[in-house]
Length: 462
Image (cartoon, rainbow, N blue to C red; front, side, top):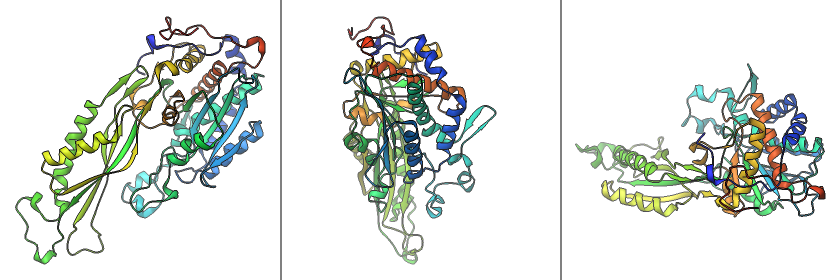
């Protein structure tokens, strides 16, 4: 973790106390929570194939009385939306929890995966299988992101079981497509949409109106309201196709008519630029540290079965992170200048994907941070910490809500190899946070607010 929020604290909209912690902790059953997480996580759900996992969440919400509905850009890839509370008739703030149904994985198309993965990597059981062993939970879907999803589902159940009536509305959402994919080259169309049909679609068409949002993801119990975006750039090297028997090899490979021979020079230049880029564009704010980085994602050139004259075209695909204050045009100008300065030859540069990063307004997000801090202190006995930079240097769906001026954070349990207790603690933090944001529907409790949680409050809230 990266230090606490110090002078940047806020006041939770409503109070939570030791009695609330005890009451909610008694309503969270560790065995039930672990079974829920493992059952959900063991449903194969790579990007594009989230139907079964979404149906599981829908059925669970229906059994537990959270009135779920499906909101999808396509029938097979629906967002699942459940609700709880709202009995205060507008007196409490509305809080939205979101987590994603898809998990990083190979494409499972053998002819594609053979270009990216070793055979042993493809056999790794953690891509789609999760289990508990020696007190530790294994498997990528637990970590990203159906473990945190299970925690906020169980948090909502605990609030209901413990008899709380929330003043504000609590939205429980499970979304497809947070990881991807993205339409690029011939892989185009709705089948290759990711973020556009997930939380982004949910916000616009899901019937939700949150005051605050939490992207439930592993943060080692830290918190950040900063998120990076990303861009993908096609760098096309152009040359001349020469019939192999007529070819005269130049002494300098970079003078070769086949543009593949220029790859070494271009890659070396991009590597130098990438190292400088991440240093020059490091961004730090009260809500987190963003460290956008760059890496070549793929190379394509020529047609292997249609050989005989080399190729006239070779493409590099460069992934470049974007901090919350950056624009994609900056990258285009820098890459164009690099091509000229390094004499990279005939070259075309074009963005194929652009998603800017975002951050919450520190003043507006302060009450939500205060609620998480109060919940964390009650659960873990220590203030919430600012999350490590890696968690504010990637895309997470709190970006969607900060983009729309809804103050949003990402926070959750230990990212890698969590224990059952980590899930229980995370569920309790989520439940207490929901109570501290939404408040109680009981008129006698209306208007109760927590004490300042960080000492002096620079935002002057009552």
